[in-house]
Image 1 (cartoon, rainbow over the protein chains, first blue to last red):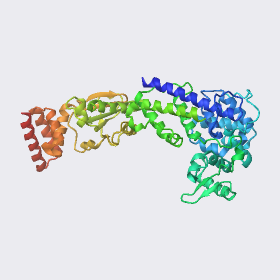
Image 2 (image 1 turned 60 degrees about the vertical axis):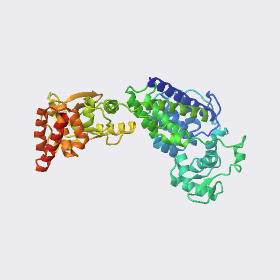
Image 3 (image 1 turned 180 degrees about the vertical axis):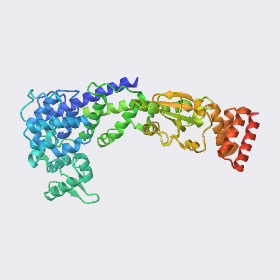
Image 4 (image 1 turned 90 degrees about the vertical axis):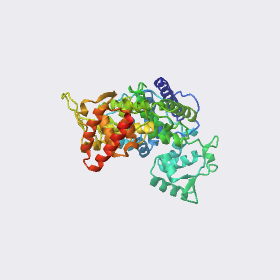
Length: 312
Length: 197
């Protein structure tokens, strides 16, 4: 019965995602229990959106989101979360309205007004204390730390991205895709950062940019090494889409095996970049006609779950 | 090992039916050609072409069957056809309405009363009866390639009686009243009688 295996793989993926989210919140200083360390960079807007996506499955996520509203919302980029949210499913965007409402009312941060939904409709439990201030010296918090130092905006994120990609040469398009800013905004930022000698431009076409990680090493104490970049947002977007598929209870939609396989194929096609950018090898849908794809999809979910568990 | 042509066809039709059912839609189509021959058990040859001659018109409470030209196919059906093509790696036009041109010169009289209906989820498939397929195959054999065509082989597989051939010839001549076409029809008939003994 392929549906049984699929339900199990969905459960594993949800658990792996929740494990990653809790570890990342823990790395930012929330008093939560998340097993394992965090070696890759936290994408703050991606983390908020993924947490909002899974609040039906894990209501405690509202506690940590509320904590973040109080202590960390000013460090979020409203423009970037807006750009990223456009790719997330509707329920996530609706919950972002509730989050923006909290950030505006409770966090006194007026930047969130444009996103706020004054009638969130969902239970938000703002009672539990999850720590006082965000922890910005954890290597995984590099993006937030640079925002504190350079201001919330493209430039801080761009430096974080180039550091976390290990000094690799990146084009404007590659950076824009990775950070979800417009190529125009990235172009302006790289020009300014090159002029300030924060980053280096390489000669050639297309132009590429890198940072000298050694020059930034003192900032990256204690290891001197930057955290690894992961394309979290597209992976979280896929998980959010799947959460909408199955509903809060995690049950598969009641339909034929073939229709299920066809929807699975849609999902993988729609989220191809989550796998491509993170170099997660998955079975090719074209090799599995019709309902046969269900088993390959199950394997796809398992590989994504493994990647999430290993990449946090 | 090659897949059974009937199971391949039914798998594709069932896929369309499942997708329509998931949308809460029910659509009826009339199918002729190789698919009808396969599903009626008259021939067993590989085909993934489904020739749609007509769509079933929704006439609530009318009791009888009312057919309409198939072009354009209803949108939910078009979407399901495209999706099945992607999912089973079929040609985009694996289910097509080319044969619907037959409406310009007329269908075999009474075809709608003799249809054999099958249900695949939200898809109802009316298979043209053997009698009507004799008409259509004789016309196709005369119209494209004569006795060497696959249509002629299909006509033989239908094992028409002399009376059925006579009725079919009268209808086919009405499709194209030119003397040239009449000659070709005669040639096909002669070959058919020889082969059928």
